[in-house]
Length: 554
Image 1 (cartoon, rainbow, N blue to C red):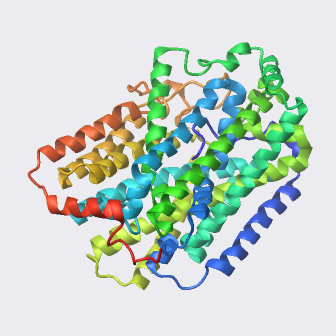
Image 2 (tube, one colour):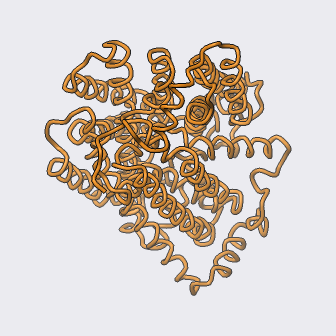
Image 3 (cartoon, one colour):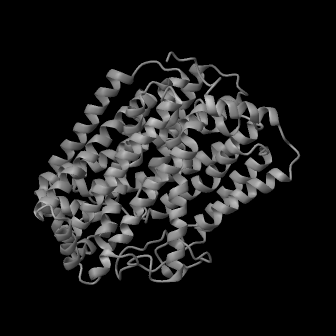
């Protein structure tokens, strides 16, 4: 989950000079890369079948997969962005944490077990099971690749700015080199380790990130005698423009009726989008049983929920120790709060460790996205559509590896193009597409007996086209004046005179999600296609897992 709050942080020049220890930061980065590569080579290298490359043949336990899901979900920008939002907006910033956590309850209750029972390798396996294979697989693959690409683009764009902070580099060429380096390491992880190697990287990253955040939390509380009330009061005192409102709703989303509606729309997309994110859904196939899938989500909820509680203290700690003035003076604004707090607590060494871990999380997230996108192309497009199911496992894995390289290169080029832009809209697009195009089709496929191919196509394409269209003509893409005079523009087009927006909301979820559900229903009732027997088979499979994999000893 990338930040929905802005660009990746860069510290002020004087702060960067004070905290900058490029040698330490480079050592941390290289150390993480080398250690994880050794682990991947030792535990996950070698020849792989398609199932091993895409899902590690369901070889992970529920606990392992739950930690990996947390590693996949908790990106560096999520940590930085939410902490900064809490520091500057208090209660309203913490609402992001609540939304992301509640999203996992939707995933647990509606899709985790049923998706694991019904599918085998990719999301399209579920959506096309009782429908016409080729058109549904093509539509699903397009949606998955769109979500994955914009998620990847946001991560890669963020990498350039964050590593500029870590390594003290500046200039366009240096940032491009950093983005290329991230892409190269990502491709290496995927090519060598496949899903097994990627999972180990995500587990390591999750442990490091949560541990670092816990250390900062205890450190901050210790400065205020482990008294949360004292911490909150200090944050209020350090933010005089907001004052006591920092502890109440409305700082960010109470200014007007439009902002209130926009928050509802964003919340809807975030809460429902998680259950439709392809790289999250694919993780359910890395466990052997539906019980393990449920256990995975339970572990993920505990870890993610605990992490977001920690960010509450980290965020208010940044507000109390750093202050809104210093945070807003940094080019990265809110997203500079956590690194600035690390420096105020432990100086350059702690900043190097925290920032190094934050950057390392990008590697884990982009690796997970890449394996999902490459599996979608190789399995759903190459094998099932182009080869009509007549493809060997070796050929499929070879295509998956090639597509991983191509996807990595595209992500690198996209990150270079977007590195200086606000990346919030990219994440909003990824979640809105997942909630609009993927989730309605998933729920209809699993629970509606009458659902058919036309309904699926109308839902997927309708959700995809409406989401992208509305975001293009929304304020986040059109010209928009900077939030702070002289600050960065919160839109893709930095000239406010080029404003061409006609859709008022920053996130279209409030419109596109109900629209996609409606189109799925309308397309279904207007088509005469109906296969009750196939639905009955799918219902049995979704409840029991019969026919998906090999029998297991219990």
